[in-house]
Amino acid sequence: MKRIVILFGVLALALGSQAQINQHRNYIGLNIGGGLDNLVYSPMNGQRHLGWGYLGELKYQHFFGKHWGFGLGVQYNMTHSNVLFDQARTLVFSGYQHPESMNNEFDIYNTYDNWHEYQHQSFINVPLEVYYRNAMNDRWTFLLGFGAQLDLPLNGNYTVNDGQFVREGYAPVTNVTYRDLPNHGFYTYSQDVDQEIDNIKMGVSAIADLGFNYALSNKWGLYLGIYGGYAINNMLKEASSEPLFSMHARALTAEKAPAIRVAPEAYNGVLNSNEISDLHLLNLGVKVGINFGWKEYIDPDKANESELVNYYMDEANKAKAAEEAAKAKAAEEVAKAKAAEDAANAKAAQEAARAKAAEDACKDKAPAYSYDRDMMQRYIDLINTQINFGFSKTKPIYNDETDHAIKALSSAMAGNKDIKVVVTGHTDNIGSDESNMRLGQRRAEAVKNVMIGEGAPAESIATESKGEREPIVENDTDEHRYQNRRAVISLR
Image 1 (cartoon, one colour):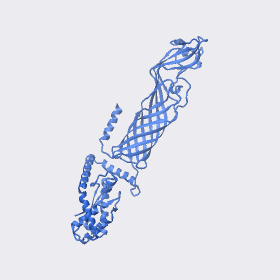
Image 2 (tube, rainbow, N blue to C red):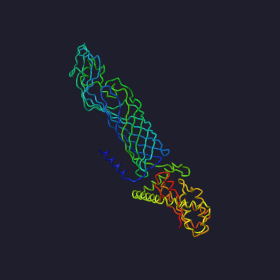
Image 3 (spheres, rainbow, N blue to C red):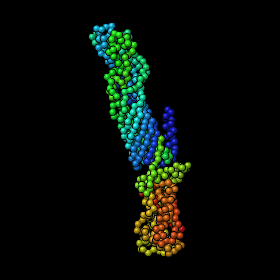
């Protein structure tokens, strides 16, 4: 019950937080879990039952890129298994000559009545896995791992606290079964057992994990998942030919006969008897934990686009983690994006008409040098529909018509210093607010330099940056982010 309360508390903390997913390169995770952690075997006479176990895990993960990586860890695993012998009858010794009746041979049998043995075995597990991850949204990341694991046995014991067995003798010659004759060695045995397990060797398991990371902050996250593993080799050190209860020939002579009237010669336990011939480790359960992530240094000039996306997302998460009003800001940004989208839709027809008129004006190659504000606005409208930028770039992308419009506007400004404009740079939402403000300013300056090169007076051109704060569409696809990476010219 205490574990369940802790689990729900962690879940409540996660669902109430306002962090974004971290696509870090490195993680250290601390997990706890439990489920069907068992020693798996097939007893010859008894019935094996599933038992519950638990584990604690420390794991390191490294991702080479956006999706693929590997993990190495160490686990402490406690397994619990049990087997029930009920109404099972096993032969212990054949051809026993009772010291008081040497001419009559007996077969010695044990009949079990609710004899219940419990095995408790701990392991140190060393898993090595390959991982695939995929970000589902700005918080959740799906994880799939598969690989192999070394299973190193530690200490273990088996106990019996209930049940009994009846030792009986069967005389084949007379077809008579003898029991409840303690003076002759036929008696009912009931005694608590607690002995060490020493017949398990190292195993190798095939393992798999499936789970989800939920970001709590820029560096910390919650992990929820299921795990499974099965030892592919037989983990018994050696198979035994001894029965569950042994009787030895030395105890059947006349001098030793009284010894067998008191107790069995030896109780071997299931793992040290002929009840089983092979043993495997099964792990199947649920685990939850906390992971800590960090990134390696990325040189923006040498990294590819995928690495830069991860890098700038990390930077954005750092900035947003420091904001106390993250939830209110997120709602405000959504509202702004929705308002910008509605405004863009309303102006779409008007802008298309203006762009067409400006395009027609440009095709006659006759720029207007007088301060015709409407004509200047047409040039600007055409330019604003075409100037965009590549990811993290400051070089404008436009066509021949836009190039002619910029030249016409710049020439008009060179002939009339009353024409003054402001160039505003914009970005998408990848990166921190601070870095995006700087990038937007560089884009505005790049367009200004192009205009100055075409003859426009530098003092007639002002620049500013809005960064990611005024998107025209939501930053939810590559195409929409491209539309938001733009520069806008307006008359002052």
